[in-house]
Length: 294
Ligand SMILES: C[S@@+](CC[C@H](N)C(=O)[O-])C[C@H]1O[C@@H](n2cnc3c(N)ncnc32)[C@H](O)[C@@H]1O
Image (cartoon, rainbow, N blue to C red):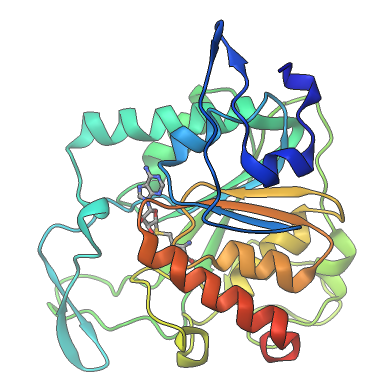
């Protein structure tokens, strides 16, 4: 099969392998699929290797933070481990850097020239990812500070309280023109954000609380992002008909935001099936009762 003949529906149907260096890859099947939403219980590199070049409009990636170092933090007044899961353990600076370089390079291949990538993280990973975006020739558009007004306090009282994450936004091709919904960002309603002033330009510091218990009724993911953050990202940088890909799906917040906004397609993948099961529950609840998510 030629790359050019792979259309959107076919990819969402079955991610049929395509000819690459004279070998045909085996098909992989989604564990869940609708007309606009597909989930793969696979390594993201395996899924991306099936995509043709220049195929995806927008990527949101929330890669492992590599911060699960057996330390402790405070949550709701209780001391809890910082460990998120095996997938979040650092393998050392060089290996972590090589991991990030491999997936970011593949993201560049599958993005359309005017396509954009968002990468979120803390200081444990974000400098490596930002360095690699520059090394691999992306054009940086913004570094958003996601301020968490309700971040957990610092237990040791020997550091400032970590209360933000950085979300980088970059375009694949320096000379292409990316999509930015300036009006929606300037004039939209953002009641959760005490920094955003009505009818004034959206700044690069966004104040958004961490997910409320309401967003976690279907189960918990240790690093679940707030729906308001992902809705803002999807709305600002995509248009109807676009295909959005999340290589580190987790609880599926990117897909839920995409579905909630509508008229776009979503593909997500995660190594952990329990997180995809959680995503499916969120998706079914959203499509059964959209108002609950607005
Ligand atoms: C930081 S979390 C993403 C959280 C997500 N943004 C959310 O809102 O729930 C990273 C996720 O990547 C998954 N993961 C780690 N390595 C992966 C890989 N190589 N391929 C696919 N998924 C991976 C983990 O299981 C974890 O759920």
